[in-house]
Structure formats: structure tokens, C-alpha cells
Image 1 (cartoon, rainbow, N blue to C red):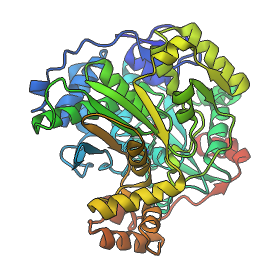
Image 2: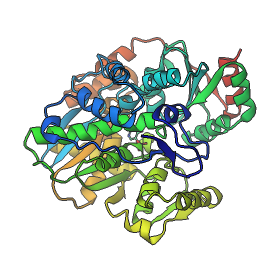
Image 3: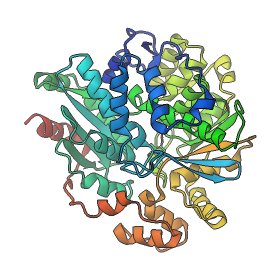
Image 4: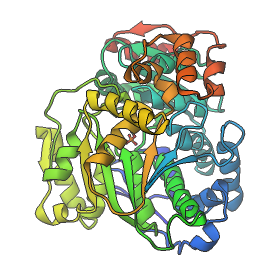
Length: 487
Ligand SMILES: *Cc1c(COP(=O)(O)O)cnc(C)c1O
């Protein structure tokens, strides 16, 4: 199974090559040339482990990897670094099922893919006889950076550089980044917001002098961003797992349609749910939940994408984003795999900041419904869910829950719970009407109040030394990069 570009002007490549390239040379994103024919057998899936289901999905999408290679990736990615034997956990609330994706080393769903990606990349590089060192360059609003460092930390032949905004990350996220001890990790805070950091990283990636300079030093850039198929595919697994477990516990009958609500930023996690549906997961509605950066809400309601708006720093910061990269893949499929159409939209986005999909493509979007939650409603949602059910959700999951209440859905619904509430202790405490404290005091206070044990990943975090404290202007990114990697 090969991967082709959404923009139709790049050669088809193997999965390994797509993982190494990240983005296609024509600027498009890699999509499977055709969907793998899996014939998912729910009767056997319902008794399989997370790792077994992951093996089926990885084998299908990474078909140039041998059985042994896939096994190796999965055993490395889903081992003792997880606090749950099943990797994911479930919490039921009537017709709603929280799919807890945050039991990995850095307490967000991004661990699920980023624990696998370094191993996928290492094997892919070996297959392609690439001897260059991979430089993973990331701008992060908090979760990607920590998850990427946890995945790539001390992995042979890789360097990881993380730039995060000085303002807007949570206390725990900052501590996770500042205390990363891997020798190949380089971490800097940037004056400005996430958008500024992101823009500067894109500039660096496109700087041909820099790229040549790296090449001369046997290095090359690679991406841990969710545009990489090595991040997307591991996220398909938990949707299949969730359906299988619902069946096992007789919550649904085989073939019954479910709904999936996902708090969304770059459209990666919800796109994985769409991919799952394309290979046989029975889905009724996909619910796209946004915060006040509600480009996607408007898009799904009108067919017009308009990034010409103010960037807002919200209390669900991992979703503060105005360009949702992975949406290009959905449009590719909904347009009937029409690359020319995709190219015309992306050109318009580049030139004017907007595009309007045609009627046919818009009609194909009917399976997606969208809504958004304000900062206030995020807080209220955390409190309401806690008061009514005793369950504590993080601000991103709260966005999902708020939007879940706004829409009308039939049948079972899975809500992707994307981060641990402990990762956003200040926001959660404030929402619960408590005096919020910083640092470990805040974590302890939250733990006592919600009667939930402090995750081991957090208590260990406060035993680590602070290493990376440098704050730089975004103009200095090029020089710190050169200094960290080349000199
Ligand atoms: C990254 C992130 C999101 C958004 O996920 P996308 O795949 O970018 O849509 C939501 N919640 C949390 C906690 C995140 O870290």
C-alpha cells in the first residue's frame, strides 16, 4: 500500500518513506492510495488486547514493515511506561463513554502516537539506508513538545528541539519541558504566543541554507507534527479498541453506529477516527469540538474556512490554533480524492486566508457536526461534571463535553478525553472554585479535593532537576539551533 500526496503532484511512496518525509514534496499530506481491506472481525477483536489490535492496524498501514518490525515498535511503544495495562481507560456516564487517552508518560493523548513514532522512524531510516541524524523540530503549545521528548529522548541518531511559548503553557507542562534530561533534547521558551513559535519553526524548516548546512553535517529535519502518518495511524487503534470493548461489555450490538466527540486543534485525533470509519468502524456522527479559536466550527457550519481572525489564548491551550493542517486530508477524501480541488483551496488559504468548499464537497461533510466552548463554559463544564458525577475532566475534555451537550446525538457516544486534569491543575482548581496554587501544592490540593491519587508521572516530575531555563526572542531561534546542533 503506497502513500500519495493530497495535492497530486508528488511520487507515490512507501509507508517508510512517508514517515521519513513527513510532508510530501509538493506541500501536500500523505494519504493511503486506497484503504486497506481489513474485514474487522469484531467477535475476535472484542477479546484482543490493545497491543494485538495495534498490531492489526500497524500491519495494514505500514505494510512495508515486517511482522517482526511491527512487533518491536509495539512492544517498545506500549510497555511499562503506561500507567494502565490496557493503555487506555474507560469511564462510563450513561450513553457517554469517556475514552481516557492520557495514561502515558506525559499525561496527554499525544503519548499514544509519540511513544511509537521514534521507533517507526528509526526502522524506516534503516530500511531506506539513511545515515543522517534526524532533527525533530517542534513548536509546541505544551503537549506535543513534552510527548515528543519523552518519545525521542535518548533515541539513537536523533536530536529533538522544542520551542514553546513563554506564556500560555501550564505549570506542569513548563516543568515537564524544563526538566527534560535526555541528552539529545534542546528546549527553549519563546517570547510570544504559540502562533509566533509555529511561524518561526516553519521558516526554519524552509530555510534552504540551514537545510544544506545540516546536510553537510549529516543531519536532516524531520517532523513529529500530527501531519506525519506515523502519528496518525497509531491513533486509529484506540477507536477500534473502544468499539471492541463496548461490544465485549454488551453496551452495543455488532454493527451498531456510535458517535465520536473529539476536542480538536490540528484535526489529527478526529481524522484518525474518520480513518477508523473508513476501514470498518461503524460511526454515525463525528463531533468536532473547538475552543474560542473556532475556525472549524464555522467551517463545518458554512463550508467556508476563514483564518482571518484574532488568535485567542484560552484555557484549553493545546487547541489554540487557526490553521488546522490535517483538515486538508479530510477535504481530499470528501472531494472524492480530487487533488486539483484541494490545491485550489490551499492556494486560496495561502493567498487570502480563506477558502469556500464547493456544494458537492460540502454535502459530503454531513457526517461531521461542530460546535465550540468559550473559556467560561470550559470552567463551568469542569465544575458541573464534577458536581453531578464526581468525575474530573481536564479543560480540553471539557470543551468536548460542552459541545456534546450542544448537539443532538442518537445512541452511544465516545468522547476522547485528551489530557489528565492534573496536567492543568490551576485551571481545574479554579474551575472547581478553589484557590489555585502553583507547583506541587496545587497538585496535592487537587488530589485531595477530587479524591484521586496523584499520577506517578507528576510526583516524579517534581523530583527532577530544572535544566532548561533559556527564554529567547523568536529571531534568535536560528542561532540557538545552529549552536545546539552544529557547534
Ligand atoms: C493536541 C491536543 C488536542 C488537539 O488534538 P488535535 O489532534 O491537534 O486535534 C486536544 N487536547 C489535548 C490535551 C491536546 O494535547
